[in-house]
Image (cartoon, rainbow, N blue to C red; front, side):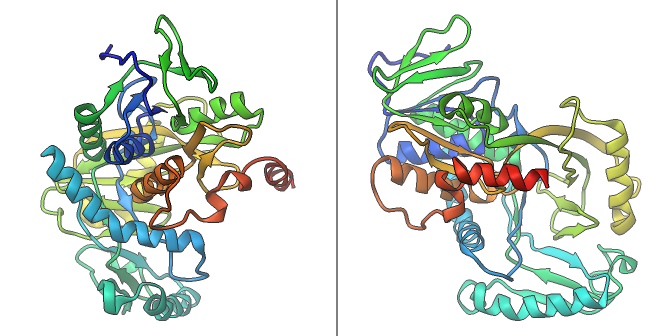
Length: 390
């Protein structure tokens, strides 16, 4: 076990996924003394996956959430480049762009409207990012033309990163500037004494504040503190193939799957979402299904070696959007979980917002109202439960 300070930490964080480590990094930069406690090991949860798709919302029916994610994706590259500079580690980041095939005339018309709205929402004259409808047969060296009979969308805001490389860089930064302990499960916290209780033989640790950020398992801790279960886990599965020669291709989103080439000569394919599951291990049948579906619209994947498959449980709040902020009834217990499929794209900006709340400062970008605890607890949670039973 790493060396523990006898003095209280300014902030203890339960969970070392992309949310927890990003919050730790931001808090350290804010000048706080930070301790991260991970129940298993770095990347044990859904943050340790394979896909690494950093994809924007569609530029339609714009709202606070879409604007927040848009701003996060704009600033992510600078955040990652600074992390790489601080640690000397690559995160595998690249602004790769994305292809979206159009399969009906209705979709074509719809995306022509989205392309027009993108000029208002994405500010291409300032950002340089575009959302363009291209004719049938475009990019046929990568996407099977039969998969896009009415053309395709090519947008340039989408990016990718290596999830495990990004986590490794975040963990290296936290270890060098703060304290990170694996195999340490947080079970309770006493605000009055500042005592963080751990399972097993670990002695309590003192901290002034606690952030619950342990992926889907954080929901159990949140229920312990609040009496309310506000989220669940959903199983996702993905795989990686040999991708030599495909490193510079754009991502494809087709048939509910992403194909994402990475800088290390691999291609990630995924991912599924199963609300009902019996285990957390990859299903061979699911792996076969992913391969068949992906090669159907991306023939260049045919015959490429399967390197690995992965499955994990992603945290999803009942109200869909993440939960970020102080738990009701507490002064020093916070939560940051429920990112589901968009965690990697917004984690750095979530960290900015939460740390600003902790130190009573104003963040650069306000959290959407639907991310705040008021949206997830009390009558709002009951509304979600009722809707789920209809």
